Image 1 (tube, one colour):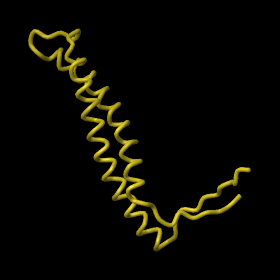
Image 2 (spheres, one colour; image 1 turned 60 degrees about the vertical axis):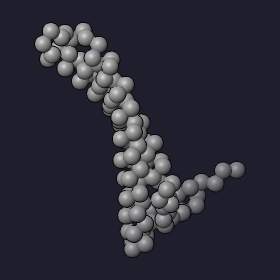
Image 3 (spheres, rainbow, N blue to C red; image 1 turned 45 degrees about the vertical axis):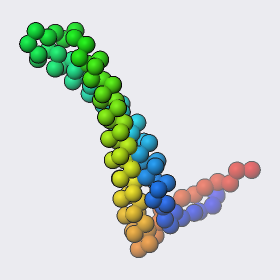
Image 4 (cartoon, rainbow, N blue to C red; image 1 turned 135 degrees about the horizontal axis):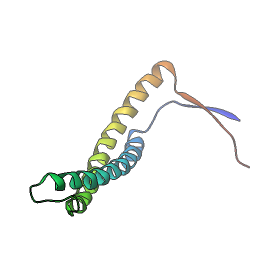
Length: 103
C-alpha cells in the first residue's frame, strides 16, 4: 500500500467530469418530468384526457433541456468546487488515499 495525497485538482478535468455526470442525471430527471408533467397537464386541459400524448411530446424536450442545463451547471460547479478544494488543500492539506500497486 502506498499513501498518496491529492494536493490540487486540475479545474478543467473536474469540470468536464462534473458536466458529464450532471448532464446524465439531469437528462434522466428531465425525461421523467416531461413524461409525468405532460400526463398531468393532459388531464388539466379542458377536453384533454390522461391518455393524451402530451407526455410523449414533452419527454424529449425535458431530456434535452436536462442534458444541456445539467452539463452547464455541472461544468460551472466543477470549476468552483475544484477552485475551492485547491485553496483549502493548500491550507490544511489534501485528501490522503491508500493505493495498491498492481503487478
